[in-house]
Image (tube, rainbow, N blue to C red; front, side):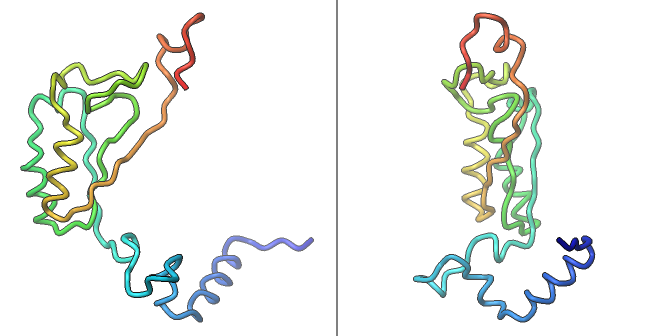
Length: 142
């Protein structure tokens, strides 16, 4: 069995891709809708907001929406899950930000981005469960 190094692989695959028309990449998987482009095929700018537990107290979703719109981003990554929930949740063992109150920070940011055409995209982070979940006798979260 012959092996190929990374550089040779990249050269070989990029050379084969340049022989295909660009249109074939932009409409991949859309045999019945050739004029409709996939959202990620035209995306050029993407922003990201990483908020912390205290941010529900002061973060202004509309202000962030204006900021990203001024930069003409196509998408904004938002914390959609992980260590803390920044939205009302009933998921067992998914701890809400202690400063969230009745607010839905994630929902507010999604709505603000949508109004400005900056596609909100949930960014999820998988982390080990907290000690309270893994204690002996606790039910499994999944």
